[in-house]
Length: 71
Image (cartoon, rainbow, N blue to C red; front, side):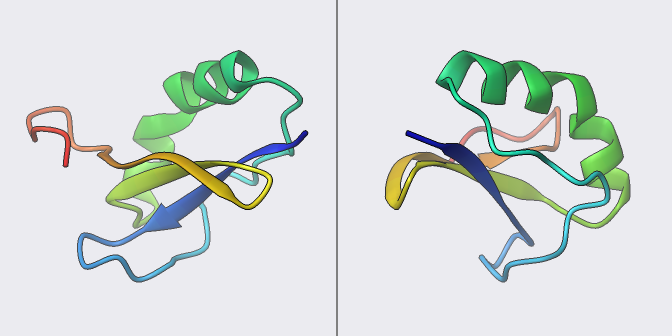
């Protein structure tokens, strides 16, 4: 089981992350990582993220903008 993030613009277009992620072994590790680097990702051009467990979408898109509601 591998947990990964997809990084997107507001329109859903995939963008490369400003901070290179790893493949996480737990959902908690993936969520902790995004909590630590979300500002860097936002500054690097990502507007939202989507969490996957292997090929299964778990949730998202989730905005990286602090003042925006979740989609």
